[in-house]
Length: 102
Ligand SMILES: [Zn+2]
Ligand SMILES: [Zn+2]
Image (cartoon, rainbow, N blue to C red; front, side, top):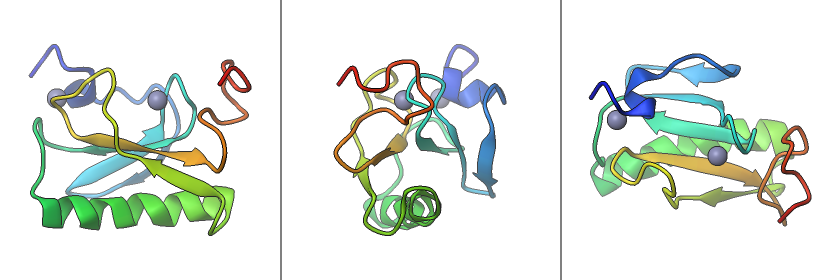
């Protein structure tokens, strides 16, 4: 889909990981690691769990093993699977302009 921001996958922010199934980049808004499935739609539960494991590894490197939470809610683009890893007790990364506003 050409009009889907996640399908276009522009490398606006730093990419932290990429493989055949997904890519992980800093979310432009939140600045937290965000995993995006390479396909437009929603993966099977089993694959979703596996993809989240990849995000957890990156989140754990960044925020520490207990320093993050996985936010599976797709607010802006509900029809294309993605998930955020957010710092424990927070919503935005300290690098975000919106840090502290939640
Ligand atoms: Zn975000
Ligand atoms: Zn898409």
